[in-house]
Picture (cartoon, rainbow, N blue to C red):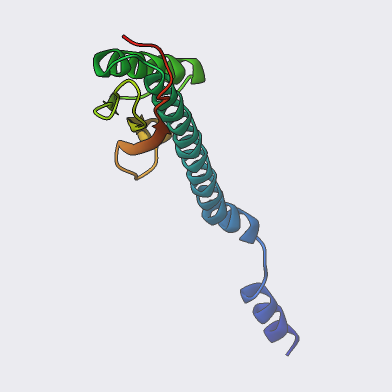
Length: 146
C-alpha cells in the first residue's frame, strides 16, 4: 500500500507545473498588453483627430470667403495633427464652407480622417484603423467684408 500511495503522489504531483503555466500564460498576458497598447493608440488618435476637426472648423468659420475658409481649415487641421505627433498612414481634410456669406449666419463643417497604423504591434489585427472626427462651427455674420 505504501508503494501505491507513492505512485499516486507521483502521478498527481505538481512538479513542473510552473513552467507549463508560464508557457500558457505569458503569451496570453503579452497579447492582452498589446491589445491595450492598440486601444490606447486608437484612442489617442481619435482625440487628436477630433481636436484637428474642431480647430479646422473654427478657423474656417472666421474666414472671409469659401475659398479662404477651405484653405484655412485644411492648413490648421494639418498643423494640429503634426503638433499632436500622430502618425497617419494617410489623412484627409474636408471643409464645407458653402454657407459662408457676409451678413448671414451659417455653419462650417470640417471633417478630418486619419488611417492609424497598427501592424507594427505584432497583433493579428489588420494593418491600420480609420479614425474620423467631424465638427460644425457657426459662421460669424459680423466679420469683415472680403
